Image 1: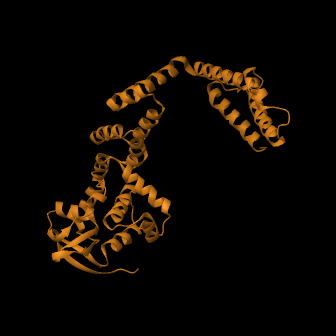
Image 2: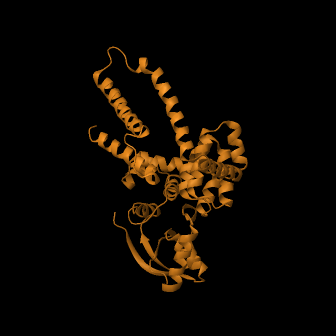
Image 3: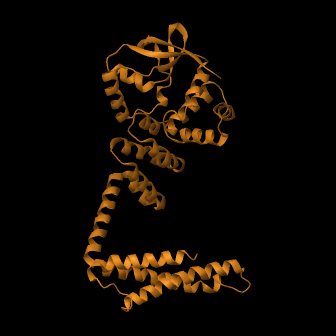
Length: 327
């Protein structure tokens, strides 16, 4: 449906910020927008729909309105949309290719459409030309996150990525832990990579370790940093010979495990395709061992001792590449 609109200057006090809670207020974006408006003025109008008593509901342009207020301005340039409020919201949501939407922003607006306008997920999916499963994932995201986490994302204190990939799945398993981790993230400047590492470690840990991690996330990162430093120190201490020796011992134990499994993996009546695939994988490993053996015994050793490590690595890689061409 084509939506008609007209351009007009509107007093800010006549703008109703009904959906401000659906927007993420990223500080970097706000500062960039403020510099632009200070220098060039408002270039792109906001989108509103008429409300009662000469007022207007803001549909799109919340960050622009916030910045215009901070700039001390009283008027905003707006497109007055000649459509129902929910239709105007859909028109903005469908512009996914024209603007960047955070998943949590889409989810918040969809929840408004469902709750405020008594729509079903099927209704929303049809209006947006989306699959119902996509709408459900957005709805689940907003329903799973504690309100405290949602507020932290909206205020820009927690990244939307961390909210959807860490806090949401954590909230499904333990809402209290999700809330406590939110408070820590909101008070600290933590990269998304660290938040992801924290959650991965949390998933693999027992109940006591999880509780300690949630009680003091900063201590967890301090301990991980210490472990990494000690590991690097150990590598320097034992040198490449020590690292090689540790690795070959690991390989030895893997070979023991593989030997014990032979009678189970290879058996009478085994499908030919399975047998062929297993033997092919064994032969590739065997050829690599033969290459290592020749190098160790000096039959294929690099002539430049100073470059031996790099040359050896290159030789092994080249050997693998030659094998892969016959896969």
